[in-house]
Length: 211
Image (cartoon, rainbow, N blue to C red; front, side, top):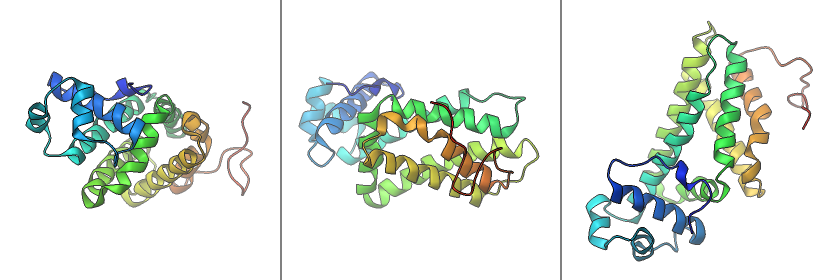
């Protein structure tokens, strides 16, 4: 069964590759990556093992391609939500809200991706950093375009903080409510960019908002 929002995986140029990525999303979300077999993936995709190996050298390579595709889809949502002309603080909050809502729309898939990527050693770490760098680049472009000076180090620190907030929410079983992290995620970015706090912000964090 396809996990909700599995369609957020970007369509691959090759139909068989796209079907294999969707199948990996479905099977791994249901069984976990360790229990997922290539046989189960090709059966779900309706292709042969030969076709699988024409696209991926092994199961991990297929998973990493899925991680890249799903992340690219979420990042595209973030970039498309930019509202030029508004203060960068508003732009970042709006974009992060859209990004987190996108992730929350597919809780089963996102839970699997965010957790399993840490089990793939150096290859997984490389792809995860690649995705995090794309998000940091967005922050640098958006914030520094407004005359603020956010350093690459602080941008990556902000991304790391947001990533940890997402992981903690997933561990609490709140993957479907990730958009609730928007105020805290925005506060992290503002603080690291040296921006003044929101009106009403206290030392314990951003102001509470009406639900």
